[in-house]
Image (tube, rainbow over all chains, first blue to last red; front, side, top):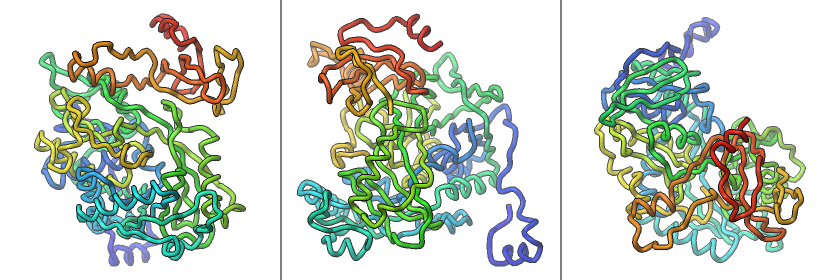
Length: 417
Length: 100
């Protein structure tokens, strides 16, 4: 692997950029690995990276039915924040945010992490009370979050309409200044490049069709479209398709998969300096470095694997966007797309061991998994390497739906997040 | 937008009139205080989440207001069979037939 720095850049400039080479290997699968990760999105590739880097386990295959980073990693609106209500969530998401802050340097790959601030609008008395409760809870957990008046919110985000006549009047906002956005593809590519360099085999176009278990129950490997591959430990990191994969090992999951859509506008000059979210009306917006406004909304209401979503969902999100930012009402939308997100009953992820020995699962990120990529991968690698959860993800076990110890961010936010 | 057939109104109506009410044929136990945590978990939290035919409840919320059941393909989103609440679950053979 060629390191990216000022000297290699200068050398390649002289040579017309002909010597960069491939960023990762594209090997055929071996017969046996120590660990198999199913799903080469950010979370899966990151897991392989931390297993190799921090735990010395390098004989790993990451299997991907499509191309790496082609699922929800490449389909989200790239919002990063950690202002979650409960202690467990604050611990997990802030662990992730701290890793984001040094990720470009660590991976020697520019993930374009930009801490431009994430502002969450309050439109009614309930929103105000809920936001202030979040702010207080966050501060007790050492997570930055502050209250802005409507005028301060407007200063932070000039396109925002704070008129009292607005259909969704802005009564204030919670601002997490450490929040922001990152380049989603670069995260997958950065992890893939480093993991591949340490010996991890990333095998694309290789769909897992079965999970093999010994008569005594433990995992022995997987069946794939490229043949049988053996491993004593298998980590499933397959977002929307987790229920289907876990079914192959006989494990039922408390998950439902919904389409979630996003869209971008035509590119315009810099106008939107931050990320602004409005949970009450489901409208999330930021501006990419290419100049496109990146807009997201809520999920469809029914289970679907179609990766498209309903037209009226887009209409609803744009209705809200135009109310909140009337300046954009003549802007053309360029592209829309959908991803399949797996949602848990309490809207918190499941990250840990399963009833099957050697089988681990990292799923249930719902509509907000991108922000957690480094933190999730980091503690999931620990869980696989030690065969027990890290204290950060101990609460996010599959057992909580039996014991009742839910981490109920669904009730805390009253919306998807 | 999907057009959904309401078996009570006997008409195809736009998706916006309906709300999805989750997986169908989940039986709520009558002896709730006697069942184990595992049984409660299976009933309350665990879901089929199939890629293929899903049996689910819909409600004609902005219409007649009544619940009914459907068999829908979760890959194409196509509604394959609509039947009234209380009618029996389609047999596995019938579901196989719908998939063809």
